[in-house]
Length: 287
Image 1 (cartoon, rainbow, N blue to C red):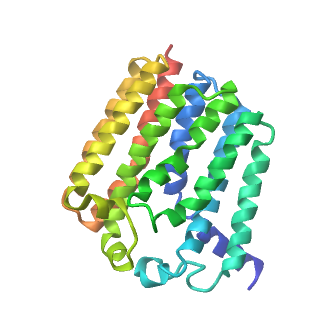
Image 2 (cartoon, helix red, strand yellow):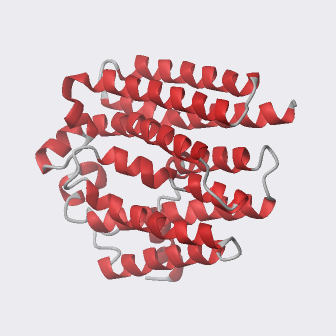
């Protein structure tokens, strides 16, 4: 296989062809970078966290496919993935994931010691999440912590400490992640039952739609609290109102539990994260 074909496989394996995961990981990181920098983030820190997000999400996708290589072959949607189809060897995938993680580590070397220390649990969470669905009833909560750990790291990099508001933001991200990843799990509910995999969609059962909306509500309440703790103004809260409207639209999409509409709601969460970020940026710009 030539180099171009091999790179194409790596491109698919790291899901760079499906950027929604990068965006859902990036938005809460950007919230934290802007809030920690009081609207004037360091360009160095911003660049490090943006590129680090891409690298760690890519590494997480590779580890996820490695962990699920025996499961994916039983699901029509995932049978053609590079590891499952045999186009990329499992050991090769591990080398790729390690290389991406090392590149992310090298990126943060210019930052302070606390940020470097926080990178240790961040890497552990990213690497262990794919296995959590085997023993956690609600792995989406674990994913929320993994996806949100850029928040305390951003505060540490900017301020040299992690204030209480960072943990409030992280908790908000956990609830948001449970909401959108439950929408995703509603798509794969039948396959998860057949394969014996845990998911929030199975845990919530017939209350799945109610649980999703409750999680959106908790995320918005916590984001409002974080805004108050950060001294944010009107535009920030207008951003939250816009995000609330987006969550309401998701209710219309998922209430019938149709696979295509649930997946559409999942993808549309990009706009939820963007609305919150827009509120933060505009609020600082108009001061």
